[in-house]
Amino acid sequence: MACCKGPGYATPMDAYRNGAREEIVYIPCIVPPQDRTKRCDYLATVDVNPKSKTYGQVLHRMYLPYIGDEVHHTGWNACSSCHDDPSKSRNRLIMPCLDSDRIYVVDVGTDKLAPRIHKIVEPEELHEKAKCGTPHTTHCLASGEIMISCMGDGHKNPKGSFVVLDGETFEVKGTWEKGCGTEFGYDYWYQPHHNVMVSTGWGSPKAFFSGFNPKDVEEGRYGRSLYFWDWREHRLIQTLDLGPEAWMPLEIRFLHEPTEAQGYVGCALSSTVFRYFKTASGTWSAEKVIAIPNKKVEGWALPDMPGLITDVILSLDDRFLYFSNWAHGDVRQYDITDRCNPKLVGQVWLGGSICRGEGVRVTEDKELKEQPTRPRIKGKEISGAPQMLQLSLDGKRLYVTTSLFSPWDKQFYPDMCKNGSMLLLVDINTEKGGLKLNTDFVCDFGLEPGGPVLAHEIRYPGGDCTSDIWLTATSPKSVSLE
Image 1: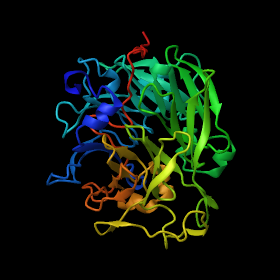
Image 2: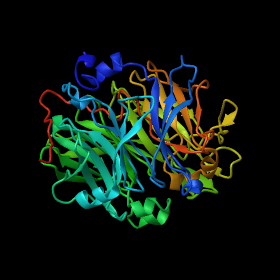
Image 3: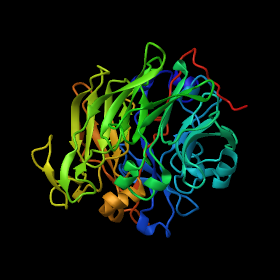
Image 4: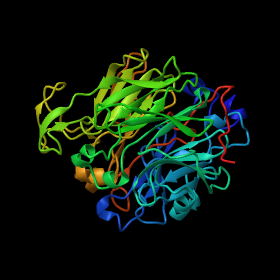
């Protein structure tokens, strides 16, 4: 049983069938650009237990000591990859900061309702020992170490790299990769059973920190490749250019079942989803399996508005794929039982840039007959658009936040920067498919005591669909730098 061993669950289906219902979530809250020099980011603990009197409320705020961190994604010191090690505990939340290059190690084990800072890895340590910066995705390793993907050097020049922290002291040990890194960096997922890690590349930090500019795409400052690494040897073995229909590959997910040699990646600017897979010859390939039509518009940054797929998540039973269209404003659910032919089975609209009467006029739409009205919840309009997603272990509830990244929030949803973002809940039909906004739940981050904030990624104390990786009995467990 999971309770008798290390952190997490023995298998994805163990988590799916036997995992406890989430009661609280941790969410980094970023100060909007207009208040950036006045306030600090913080980690919010939110009550998501429907039986609680404080359901939908922030229970605790752990304020950071510095201004201008831009916390983004978070991860764990231990997950299901360490399940067979009873000495490991999922008691530290790792919080890298995109702008400051600082890494916070947060104690969530002493009091899960009131996290506290355990250690701060200062940017100088990251720059000097690993020669990298703009840290993004965190995963724990079965070796007991922690690995964080990075998107730049210490000066925000593009550089895809992976920094490794000691799992006990949290000191920077160096970089994981041998030889050169990649042109761009962003997300990654490893699967030791197939001796592979796959990573993506958003683009140059100097480009995306300045906001979205179409010229940056034309001049090659954004990526469109997947990078495949030999897990045992720490070296790049294949770069796969996905082509002009794959600009900005962001979130990448292997199927949870560790023997599966395939997964999916969402390409933001192209509004496409690619399935990547291992071929009979042992190399890796990819095929486009979902494409969201652009909308012809007036009054927006481009004449053709992409859906802008900014997050992708797979259910633990590997049956459903979900993604958010941050520009169009919808969340979609696909049945991926047929891995090569995803079938749309659910869709819900939660804001976006094409809402009627808000300045953007849609002149041609291959999907909708008319522009939607911005939805309201508990008497208030939903701010921004659906962005970060987190699925309950049983696949029945999808949590959604509406902020992407503060410079882009300011550019595309300035009202959200003034009014704050939201945490929403979508109920899921897991039998036939279907999505419905739960109107009884909302956490409104426009009502925060210090002023509105931009809430981003969602984490459960016991692990979730985007932080846990499973191994097989034959998977190599150690990738130590020593």
